[in-house]
Image (cartoon, rainbow, N blue to C red):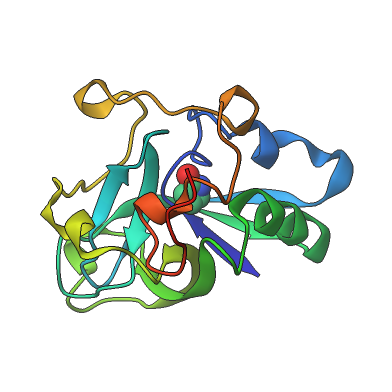
Length: 164
Ligand code: PCA
């Protein structure tokens, strides 16, 4: 299947190593793509994590990268993204050309969305394309976090109560 990555899994970003290590799964790059619908893409929470919010029609036609993955690689990505507890992997339609978002080809892929997000996230600045250190916000990798999931998830999730 095709997975559309828009955040830290993109080439050059902090979790890209997961897309490159072929020992535990297949992951073939299939180029840059854009969501056909607009979505809010924000960087939020204490660890400056990028989130694609499941709210079509707001934000930008988000730029990302397509990868063809097998079940083993998908399982690995699902583990990193904590699907389906934190992000939810859902269908998304993308296209190769930025100018094609209103017509043109439809490519069926899946992406990791934040579904149960707190409304304040919609007040943040919405990106067209993620890059670590945007607005000085540096992403913290899981191993560098002082508070582990799900204890800090209430910051962005409606499904978790404040625990710390
Ligand atoms: N990793 C996934 C979702 C957000 C993130 O940082 C991605 O790059 O698509």
